[in-house]
Image 1: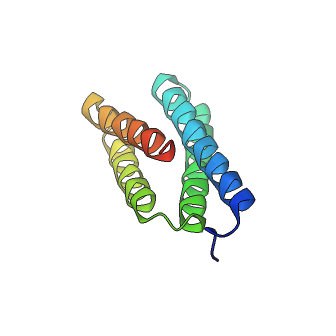
Image 2 (image 1 turned 90 degrees about the vertical axis):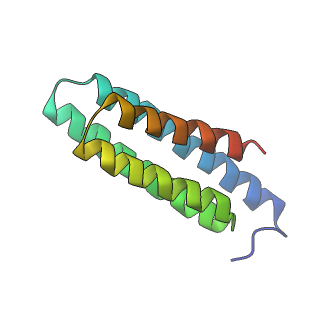
Image 3 (image 1 turned 120 degrees about the vertical axis):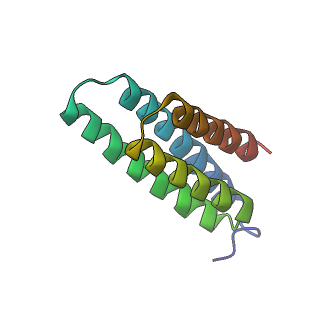
Length: 105
């Protein structure tokens, strides 16, 4: 799929990408604050779906940098789930901030 020639689609993919990052960040903050296992599971489900949106839209935009950044976010997220430390949480927030910055360029 070639996106570069079709500006309306590109704009839509960029919007969906930004929304995916925003939803992931919101879910991550909720996950960190939640004390209920059922609620944590819902946040994790939402974050997983957001990662898929980020993946799909970065692929559609044919943006290797965004794909690499998404892969790092996914890796850091899995690491956080295994070891929910402040250091790992900081890495995720840095990944989110990087994705936001990159998607605005």
